[in-house]
Amino acid sequence: VEKLKKSFDIPGNMFEKKKTLKAVNDVSFAITEGKTFSLVGESGCGKSTTGRLISRLLQPNQGEIWIDGEEISKKKESQLKTMRQKVQMIFQDPYASLNPRMKVRDIIAEPLVIHTKLSKKEQQKLVSEMLEVVGLNEYHADRYAHEFSGGQRQRIGIARALIMKPRLIIADEPVSALDVSIQSQILNLLKDLQSEYNLTYLFISHDLSVVEHISDYIGVMYLGTIVESGPKENIFSNPQHPYTKALLSSVPIPDPKLRRERIILKGDLPSPVNPPKGCRFHTRCPVVTEMCKTIEPVMKKGLTDDHFVSCHLIK
Ligand code: SF4
Ligand code: MG
Image (cartoon, rainbow, N blue to C red; front, side, top):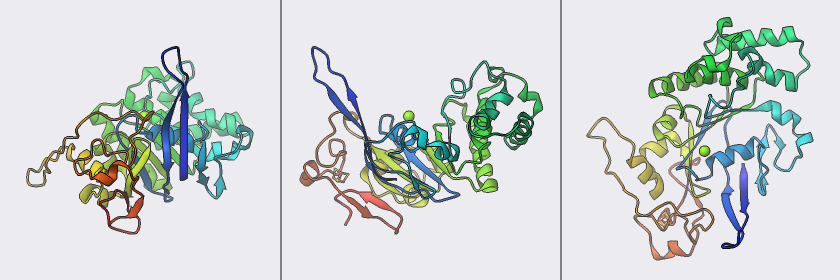
């Protein structure tokens, strides 16, 4: 993903002029095959929009998206056939994203119906395989999704995403609607499937403890930009950006010796309609300097070659 940008127009009314919301502003990162790259940040930071751009549910205004050697950012829907087979989504709400009128076996087979010419029998053979892969069985196949718990429904969603053997799976808050005990089951399933099938995930979450569990690489987003990205170990044990430090300081750590001082950010999250000049984080940064208010920082190399930080304090 290279310098991706997306803004939305908000129509004006008799009191206010038309406005532009800059949802994603100059976002770049790379996902390694067989690994998990997570986008993390507060709600409204642009992480879901980034996921929807990469899956081309939305079209970017600028930038490039390369999947398997193919640039897809400017393609029309009719040219996106191959890409639609290669990229599958898992959504946050397994209650809303599964069609209540379809039997589970038809939900899972749906991508095959759309993208392949397999016979009904061949489709159902793959459905049976997928059910087993995600820990379900034929008992579930002839029922409706609403007959099952949230965790089982998310297994159905995962089976549907997997059946096309995708090159990339984009999972947008896939466990946020589930109980904590079920969350770890689903995260472990996603990890097991990854090591078995060499799956590549773009994982989107606001929850740092979830992100820590699943990620290899992390991009921390703030107001439409990535402020720090790199290997999980760097981000969690030695964060460099003041925003990452503040985010991490709010994660509970059981061992009191390891506990870090909680950094409370002042003020509210500014509106992406009118993001602050200079460094977008300067209105809340605990170590802000004068230059931060006017000059936008550029990405610099952090602790390792694959670690990047956008802050004037990084030399
Ligand atoms: Fe804080 Fe300045 Fe760094 Fe922005 S550039 S994070 S305001 S120190
Ligand atoms: Mg979201």
